[in-house]
Image (tube, rainbow, N blue to C red; front, side, top):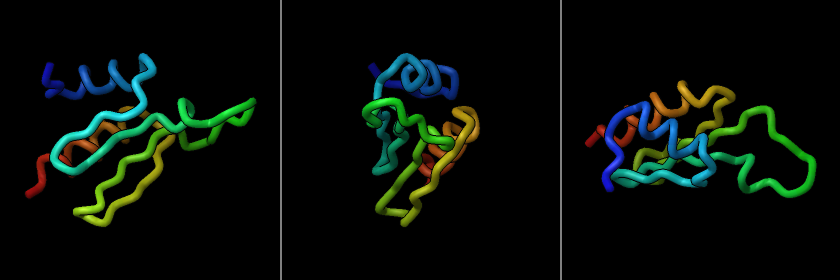
Length: 74
């Protein structure tokens, strides 16, 4: 199944899937990786080694927008 639009990506990440990747760009829910009671303030990470971007976001919508922008960049 190919995930293409913002709402689908947000739903997949929100429902607990840790990483969504496309075109060498990834969106990760950090809360899924943290152990214990620690909940990070900025819960989402968008990274791309290709574009040298490693950003943290508190809002899933903003993180998804950044992910889509990077994954569509050539």
